[in-house]
Amino acid sequence: MLRLSTKGQYGVRAMYEIARGSVAGPVTIKEISEKQHVSVAYLEQILNKLRRSGIIRSVKGPGGGYVLARDPGSISIGEILKELEGPVAITSCLDPKEGCVRVDSCVTHLLWKSLGDNIERFLDGMKLQDLLQGNQLMGLDRRDTGKNTHAARRGRPA
Amino acid sequence: MLRLSTKGQYGVRAMYEIARGSVAGPVTIKEISEKQHVSVAYLEQILNKLRRSGIIRSVKGPGGGYVLARDPGSISIGEILKELEGPVAITSCLDPKEGCVRVDSCVTHLLWKSLGDNIERFLDGMKLQDLLQGNQLMGLDRRDTGKNTHAARRGRPA
DNA sequence: TAATAGCCGAGTATTTCTGTCAAGTATTTA
DNA sequence: TAAATACTTGACAGAAATACTCGGCTATTA
Image 1 (cartoon, rainbow over the protein chains, first blue to last red):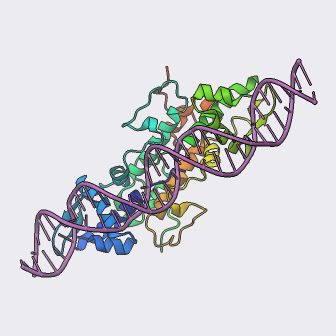
Image 2 (cartoon, protein in one colour):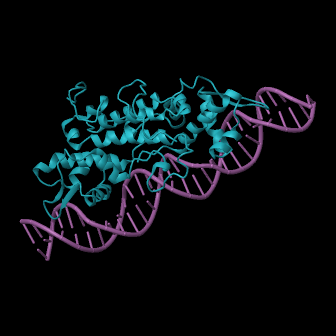
Image 3 (tube, rainbow over the protein chains, first blue to last red):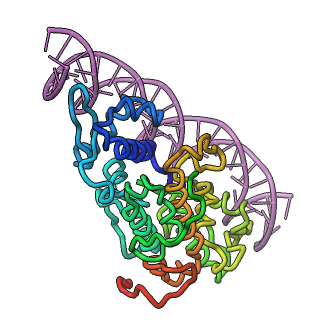
């Protein structure tokens, strides 16, 4: 239920590699491919989208590759996923491209809308920076919109 | 991104009709079909699963149909969806049927796990009873696990 | 200019989704 | 017992989405 496509998953992992490596210069597709076990051809497709959206920049020629276009603290997981998979739309009803014919009569409309909003808040609140620092636990017990990190210290990766 | 299948959607809507109508006796597939604009044949498939899981009971013969097997306050949306679509599994990694080969090395594992848990909490907390009462707003601004309804008063259906 | 690295659009195999269909079985009413 | 009503089951098929691959091109650097 509610599975993310591989494009979205690979995209996030690729962004992670770029964020991690680009302090030492551009990261090539080949490197990402090897570290994350995704084919070069498929990654091209994914990174192309991300580049066109302005999240990353590309550098051509020898020594080239990809670098972040912005601070990792300002790039959210939600942004990456939306670029690759479109907006969160639990039902076709809630897809801005399709629209709901009978919003008012639909008893479940509000339910799916709430769920979608919930998910979106989660994804937009989670930044690439958090992934880099292993702070993903933030979302496990979030109570407000902010980024309090005082909670959830268990399960830290060794 | 993250779309629910029609099976899940129709299933919830069907459950709503059964819950609403079964105070006056069993609800037939035909009635549900007409009210929710879903074919009889497809509903048969869906209701079958739900019956086998014990959420609803069927009554055969003339005057028969479907009734809730339990109190609508004890039936969660999550339960309905899981029965029809399997567990929440953002990635194949997190699907109990497949499993993750390299949990530890996967930087995003925890991220998807958190998101999945978040969604699951939402769906399990939302009961059929809430749908009946139009209490779906509960999830719009939930801050704790309970069911406080003092918040989120805007956007009430006219 | 030759090697490197990204850029781009088309094409395809596979899987999942969304449903239909036909032939049953069980229960009640007359 | 027969007819009517309603649920049960498994197979199947068209459509759509997914998950890629492929071939050739362009820009940059040494």
